[in-house]
Image 1 (cartoon, rainbow, N blue to C red):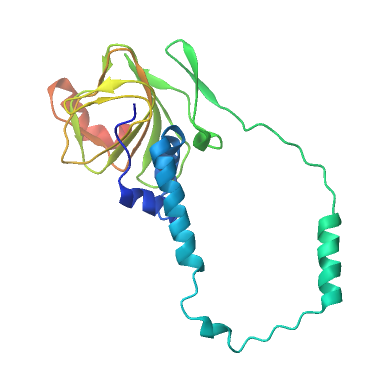
Image 2: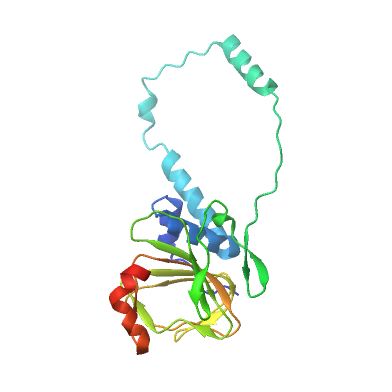
Length: 224
């Protein structure tokens, strides 16, 4: 059951087209898995359409003269409706990745995005998405069964959309479809008992806070 969703303000910015591509993809991936947010997006889209197309002052049309030639209008409509074309009803492309010995289908939002090869150490593997958005980085992240991410916090924000499997941290447990937004006010160490596949978006390098992983902080910018 999905328990974690984008805030209303973030969904509104998504509908208004105000977010970077990586966040649009993350929200789209969550919405595809979440009936509740699908309904919210429908309502926000309708509200935005009403806002854009509403006419508060009809006087703007007072000086507009419309003179339609009925014969020309009928001819144009006839030509449009008589046009024939070859239409192919193709099923949408479904992309998948191999994870935990199986093929996992990815959300449609990732259909047109390419990514690098998966690389990693131990039970952590990731593939960077090919999105050129300055300091924003996006990855497909796999945590193998029994794996964990070292304790860390964030200089900026970190968004995680759980695409398959489950994990937990000091705050909560998460399941497929959950949308998790964290910032510098959170410190955590995600652990996955059975393994998981995530889409992650961050606008700065993580800051490791315990153990030997702290040695990575001086070079965090280069491996982020």
